[in-house]
Length: 336
Image (tube, rainbow, N blue to C red; front, side):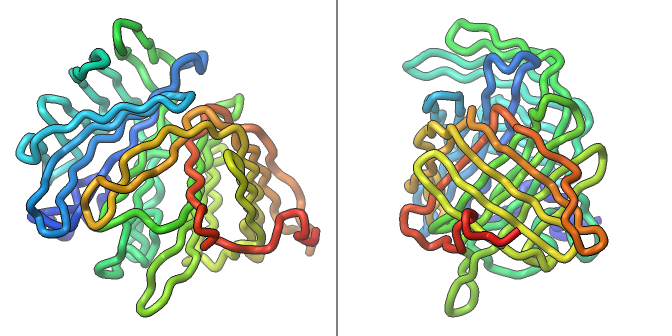
């Protein structure tokens, strides 16, 4: 299959092709060790300004407690494969099999090799090529999203500023975004540390520009023992309730068959660079170390029966609703 078509059904691939202006793309690779002592996320990406005059590639690093770093590289040091996922930035390599990094700045260095086990991707079908469903086919959307692996194993280690971080027996997660800009308002939460293997949650709610207006779109999935329970605008699920506070959020999504209730708490965010019209000049407040309490209910015989409840730790969380654009009834008012 030719690359322009292949990339639609392989969201991990670089989606930009020959684009050189008003464009960004970034991969989010989260790694948590077996003891949960040193979670870390690396975000390699590329940025082209609105007129194309300012271009660069980058690797962001996120750690718990509000710590973040940004390593910048010339744009021409970003390379990518077209036959399968593989990118490199200034000698740092990222593939489904793992990553190799050798980074340095005035604060110190980040070096090492972390290997990934088999990925658990959001399912891709002919008419629904990934987490966005049929919206993936809509041209010129502000931002596209891909969930590359809900859960996978880790091995190897990183050395950050002289401290070795071993990842043997740890768990990883991978996703990505690409397009022009991040939404003006959004909520995102992810955890695959629920005290037992086989459970992972990823959820996002965002203001989506559409024609002459905008709507609140949502995508969420709970991976439970091999089954992915999906709640998305395109599946007919509804945002039953939502409320946000500094460092916390409550969200409930429902359809006719199931309900997903999420409570996010303890988010102590880092200030990351985020894209606006391709340039990394906006801000995203991201926490790595929050808790997501998830409850899944299945409707049987007209009644909602709880089939899972658990706390996901080492959660990645972004709560960006300062403008109050994301609204719904309070979850305290939601009838049961």
